[in-house]
Length: 97
Picture 1 (cartoon, rainbow, N blue to C red):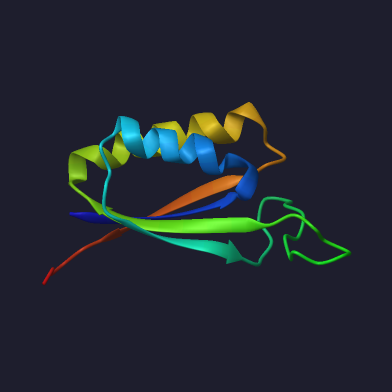
Picture 2: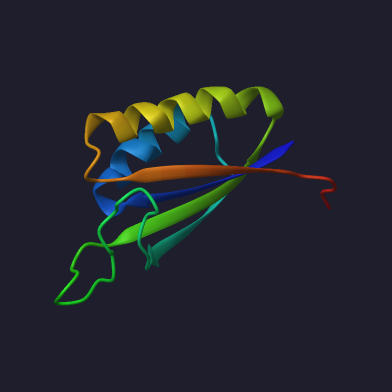
């Protein structure tokens, strides 16, 4: 099993929910507001007057075979509008209770 952590511009919320529905990913934890700046020239997202855009993030644990498909969807979402920004990070899950 793998854990996938996705950080994305809130403008992509509905599209990412659609991806989860398509892949039948039902277990996840969403962090509705996260602050930060992407390493690939991203603008800060601070929910402030100076930097009003906002990011969200979600973490899910999925079977290994779901990861490449999920990452392909994330890549497609990123390619639709680079200014929005979305990134995914994958970790191995060694144990689960």
